Each structure stands twice: as structure tokens, then as C-alpha cells.
Image (cartoon, rainbow, N blue to C red):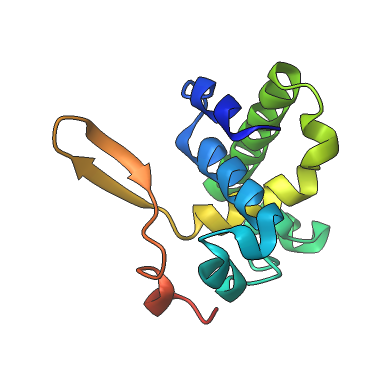
Length: 135
């Protein structure tokens, strides 16, 4: 996948776009300007409700959280499938599990922000999120 293809993806949700960009940066290894920050990020995301076991999920039955988690997982799968449909070879280069991990990481670290002349959007400020996390 080439970086120039990213410019055509503006119709996807911001988290999808940023997740794919950061995965591509991670794949660059030492050639990525983001490597120092990417190296500080966690390797596991098991504390996210998207990774709860069946028993943990059962504890949420009857709450609005279960429906919200199910809706979010469906949206993540949908975004991934749309990109996979639009970009030949995407699924081979970025497996769903890798996409899900980056998405969950972003979900816990993205900010809503107001940009003059643009309006409200979502984004990241590398290192700004570190006080909120153990890693």
C-alpha cells in the first residue's frame, strides 16, 4: 500500500484513517519519525471491553455498555471491510487483528479538538496522553 492512497480515504472515520497511518508508520520501523513514540505504546490491549472474555462480557448483559461495545465492534469491522474492498492487498498487509489493536489504542488516546477554520475533529498529540496511562 502506498502512502499516496491515504489521501483518497477522507470519507472514513478519523480513527480508521489514523489507525492505518500509524500501522504503516510502525511497519517502517527505524525509518519512521514516530518510532520513539510507537515504541512507548503498550503491546497488549486486554483491558479494553473489545477484548473482554465471554465471562466478562456476560457481566455486562442488560446494560447499555454491551450494546455500545457491540455497536463499536461492528463499526470497526465495517470500516476495515470497506478499506479492504477499496484497497487491493490491504487485508494481506494489515490483518484485522493488527488494525483492531491500533484502533483500541487510539480509542483510548485520541482527543476531540476544535481547529480554526475546520471545526471540531479528532486527533492525537503524541506524548500528550502519557500522563493518563501506565504505558
